[in-house]
Image (tube, rainbow, N blue to C red):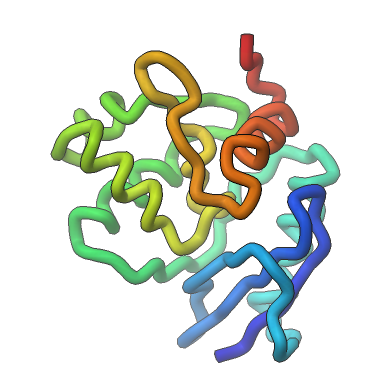
Amino acid sequence: MPQLSLHSPLGPLTLSEEDGKIVALDWGRGRDQEETPLLLRARAMLDRYFDGEPECFDLPLAPFGTPWRQRVWEALRRVPYGTTVTYQDLARQAGGSPRAIGGAMAANPIPILIPCHRVFGKTGLGGYSGAGGLDDKRALLILEGVELG
């Protein structure tokens, strides 16, 4: 499986590709590095994003998950840069409960590209599964210009 790492304000990140689609974005540097056209394009988009340029990440993605989680993640991909939704909003769109939506966010294998950092709880930030936890979520939201109050 081709992998390519990049430096980011959150630390090193590694993209993984399978069958011409991004299947994972992990915190940390991958052992093997292979520059494929898709991974180079994704890395360039992430570099621009971390430089503060709005990105829509129109990349082919193939996150592994149940059909329901696929539906949740697809709905989440439609949340624009610099905006947020609640777990309840996503539950209305994809079905399920806010708690189940939280589980889908925690299982998201391609964070940032599938922007689970844009999802809030009723009373605050909610959680975040990145290596830096809520600090990473705050950093991504601030980068996108979201007012955190």
